[in-house]
Each structure stands twice: as structure tokens, then as C-alpha cells.
Image (cartoon, rainbow over all chains, first blue to last red; front, side, top):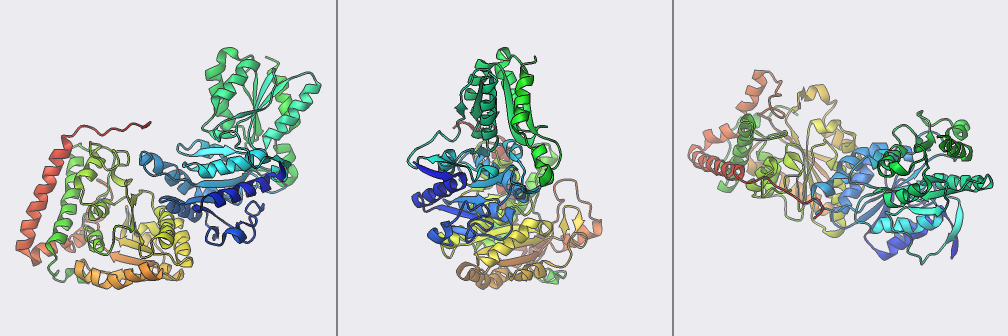
Length: 324
Length: 308
């Protein structure tokens, strides 16, 4: 076991992927010499060379498009989008080409492209640097969308993503980059498309992914002192969605609260709430409740603590789940 | 660029093989318009009537290891790459034997190293990536991408030009400048010129104003060789004419503009210059396409198993 930050775990995972397969490339803005704004690609260019760790111009559409062209015959590019809010210039390539080409060719063309996106707030940055755009991509058929929440998962999930033959949007919880944990560098980890129960409980199911997993674990700890037992599920994969783990939990607890940083309105939680009501209707003691950001642009950094869901807002929703 | 007076000059004789292909594409496109008129086709399509000579001229300059990225007006590009009018018509009609099982339709074809997409400009960054791939794994091969004059309004074009020039990639950008972007004439949608835009990125530009296949090949052969072997991306701008509508029934041009284009159509010019060779080939390709239409129309609908 080794103690790693989440950023370093990703770095180690990428390094191992590059060692295992010479077709793996890393490309993006400032990923080479600088090692990325969050140092996730630190040292990779030095060790693997400028041909495999490519510093690109500021051109998100060009980066993703080039990656598609490289992937058409054998390369496995890992693209970094520097901040969540910078992904939109690449939307055309992601939605119209990357997601659709494999489907249109009936799977004859595989595009093993990983698009890494640091997402979410909590680091005192501004809008365009603190957003949670996951629902745009889960809405797009043909893309896998995953989010890691801790160093051990980050290490295995990035390697699994690189090995996967499908295009993947890989969300990294920006404010958890510096969280440390023990990582088993030899472990295989939970499969990429599986959710994981990270804390068992019996009264309410908390569903989260990325940065909110830690918030939910803390909320469950606080609730325990008040005599409530909360189960916390880290979804890990948003698309495809592991509904068996979700439904298995909600059918036991009868109550569910979904937590994400993205705005509640038509956020990913809306899909979860709808699916749970469809599948677990007769087990539910209360409606599925959602905790998330507000329908505003991401606020100035001094206000972000008011915007982001925290322990109190999660526990408030848990309380409300018992009022029905 | 200026009006192509050269196209009014008597066209020299073309090889039978080239003329057959020109006429195959012409009759294929006319057949599509006819099928649409009779309600036999679904969706939409864009025909390249008037522009057939561009991919036919380039055919001899491209090889099997080269990539071709086509656009919404791509039937000619496909037929110049593959002698497969049956597969293309089946694709457009959603019949058995379709290139992509009928999933792609008129403007989204994937076959070997041929890729088309209808969204303007978005194939350029992908072609750039393919060119980078070729530079590393198959030196001497290139990625060719067809775009139009309207495409130059899209930002993705410039990201790709920058990357291709910066990384010295074997990228050949073929511009079919037909003077009109759907319904908007070039003068209303493009500031400056294609040439100056290419040059701003240090990318060479070459203009073609003739539909003489041999002359085009002669001019382009050394330039294309430099794309292949010296990693010098190239923009080739054809001044050409779209005789038909953008899609169907949406031609907003005044009659005199269309007439002007018709007067420069290679089809009429060639028929006038070489009547005997032309008449024979024209009739043969007309009959070939008619037979293909009959064959493909009678086939069952294409199917696919999404779980296969």
C-alpha cells in the first residue's frame, strides 16, 4: 500500500497505462512541460517524450478532433480538458463525432478516447473553472461517463478507462485532488461500470459521485450520532448506470437522497429520481429528494460555500425524507 | 478568385475511364433527384451536379493508404474512391447491401479510410489527427479532406490549420468553392479570401480554375508529393459550380446565375468538344445507373442487429 493524493493516483495510473501500451498518448493544454494545471500529468512528458505527451495549442475542438483521428486506427489518446468550463468548444467533436461514429459504424470503428475533465467547485475559482457539466454528456448516447471520488478508485478507474474501447468522459473531483489515501498499486479495483456501496446503512440511501461522495460520508457520520443510519453509494459510472446496486439499496431503505454539485433542475439527479420511482415505487416511503446547486451561473468564489451542497443541506434533505 | 474563363476553353480529351466515372456520378446524382421527386427516397440529400470532376481529378493522386474525409455533398467523393454505386444507393435508400447497413445514409459514410460527415468543418480536426497518425506510422500517406467555401465560417477549420501547419502534417484540404453556401453567396459570408486565410497559417494555397482533368493532375502532382513527403499541408481551391439546389427545391439563385453556371458545366462543354466519345459513354452510364436503380429499389430494407 502507498499513500497517494488523488491527483498523484491518477498520475500513477496514467504512467502505468503508458508503460503497458505504447499506443497510449496524452494530449492537452500544458500537460507536458508543466504537467497540467493540477499536475495530474506531471513528469510524463519527461519520461515518455514529446511524441507521447503532447502540448497542444488552445484548441479544444482541435484536441478532441485530433484524438478521434488518432484513434481511428489504433492510438489510445487521453485528452485533458484543463477546466470543466472549457469543454464546450469541443462539444461538437464530442457529441457529433466521438459519440456517434462507433454507433454509426455498428461498432466496426472503435474510438478508445478518454477525455479527462477536472470538475466541480470548492477551490475558490470562478465560473468556467468550477462547473459540473456531466448531464450534457450523460444525455449523449454513445459516451461512457464516469467520475472518480477517491485515490484508490482514481488509480484503477483511469487505467480501466484507457483500456476500454469506448469513448469515455472521465470526471475528476477537482477539490479532492489533494485528498490522501492508501492505494494498493497491485489491486484491480471494482469494474468501471459498477457502483459501490461505500458505507452501509438502513434508513436512507444517499446517492453521489465525484466530490459529493466525501460530503455524503461525512453526513452519514454526523447522522449516526443522531441515531440515523445512512447508506452511501458512490455511483462511479453515470452512463451506463448501475441500477442494480442503486435499486438494491433503495428497496431496503425505502428512502433516497441524490446529491450532486450540478444544478438540480434537469441535473443527473432527475434521471436517478425517475428511474428509482419507476423501479422501486412500492418500496418507497418518500419521494426521491435531490440536493444540488442552484439554477444560476456558478457564483463568485466568495459565495461558493452558499452554492455548493454541504453536510447541512444533505442532512436537511434526510430530515425531509422522514416527513412523508 | 476570379471567374473561371478557362472552363469555357475547349476541354481536351479525357481517358475513357475518367469520362465514365464523371458520367456515372452525374447520372447517379440525377437519378437521386428523380427518386426524390417520385417520393422514393426518405430524408434529404445533397447532390454534386457540376462538381463531379473535382474528386475524379484527385482520384489518380490519392492512394489506398490515404484517408479521405468527405462532407454533406459527398456522393462524388465516394464514387471516385470506390466503384460501388450499388452500395451507395442502397445506403441512401436503406436497402440490403448498403455500405453502412443504411445507418449512415447520404452523408455519414464510414468505409475503410473514407469518412464523411454532414456538419461543416468538424472533419478537419479529425483529418488532422489522421494525418498525425499517418505521419508516424505510414510516411508518404496523407489525409485529404473536402470542404466548401461556406465551411470557412467554422472555427474548427482554423484550429486544424494551425495544428497541421505547426506539426507539419500531410494534410490536403480540397476546397470546392462553388460560390454559394446553401443560399448565401460567398460575397455575403466570407471576408477576405481562402488564399489569405491559408497563408496566415503558413499553409500553401493553390487555385484551380479549370475542369480539365489532365491539367489539374499535372498542376497538383508535385504539390501533393510535397504534402506526402515534406509534411507541407496544402489548400487546393477549386472554383466550381453547383448546378442543382443545395438540397432539394431550395435554390434561391436568380435564373441568370444558374444559367451562368450551366454554361460552364463540364458536361455540356465536353459533349461539344468530343461528341462521339461522349455520346457512347453518356448512354452507357445512364443505362448503368438506371439498372442499378432498378436493382436496388427492388431489394428488401437493410437491417442490423444493434446487439451483434
